[in-house]
Image (cartoon, rainbow, N blue to C red):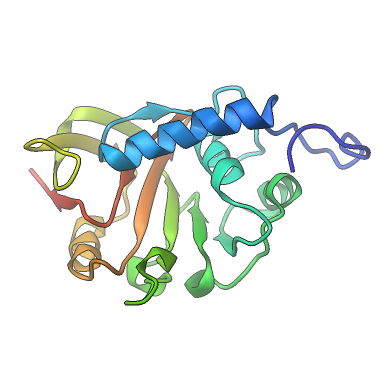
Length: 199
């Protein structure tokens, strides 16, 4: 659900996408490009004004990919939850069962999230992780599908131990978790096929 509806102002909620179809398509293309080219920074949701601590890119990703059939877990607080549930209709579920997990602070352990199964590896969770900054050309060395040789991405605000936890996550392929990193109106993706090395 997007845009203004009766009672919207009374609920104290800010609008979602101005044009749900066009804005949703643009964000979908940004996420698809980010997943296809791991570590490449894309823009999405610059016109959105979601409630704090939810940032524009994370809000755009969830408005585009989540719906009433998508189990959701988060740490974003009451205002962000109300905004997301109003615009997306996502049901809240325990983190281990959620298709999408939003982390605006310290995220849950990757291993604690839905991993999918041999029959349905696509059922692994997507962690939408808000960070402080994303800078290409320095930082982690990313290797894997969609990367010609290697791509470098510095992530300011990644949790301690993330690279080690990611190695375990990647070793479980085709099971595991995908991550979308978000700051402001920018995002970058880490599909579970991507290898991360420090230095």
